[in-house]
Amino acid sequence: MENTLLKSAAAPRNKVQAIVMTALFAALACVATLVIHLPSPTGGYLNLGDTVVLLGAYLLGPWYGAVAGGVGSALADLISGYAAYAPATLLIKAMMAIVAGLVWRAVREKQGGTLLAGVLGEIPMVVGYWLYDALLLRSLIGGAAGIPANLVQAAVGIAASALLALSLRKSAYVRRKFPLL
Picture 1 (cartoon, one colour):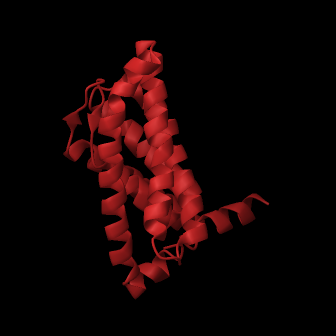
Picture 2: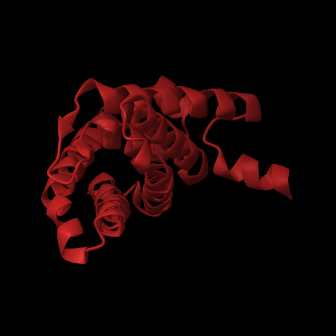
Picture 3: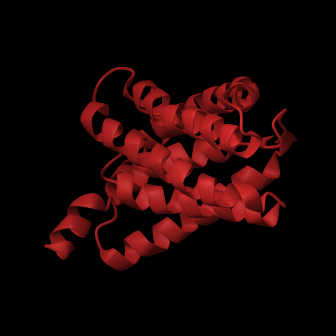
């Protein structure tokens, strides 16, 4: 049963390839998060990591994409001195990839599918960080201060991942290696 679940969940054709690609996307998510690092009003920061989290969900599927996005983004928090956010980031980015990956599977052949998957995938990010900031600040209203910055990050992640996914879909090689795309 487990082997069947892994086979259906993995975009790559074998388990070793799936693990290697998951590790690669975790590293890419970490680097993309660290490259541009703009502080936000609530003590967090804006970054390009969402682009890789969403792209990983499209290419690897929801489950491997969740591991890659969650681990890579949480690692970036640890490296950059935001350890208090790492546990939340792990869960939030994993949920983001699961939602985006599941929606992508359902709508990838439809016009605007990448945008829909991205928008729905970013909802857990915006809501998750709002609630986590509210927990840290002990105020739902105070936690809401980060929503505008998170919406900007979400918009950039949605647009960039959609452009990358559409470009990558044009390659027969990429489609062969990542059949979920």
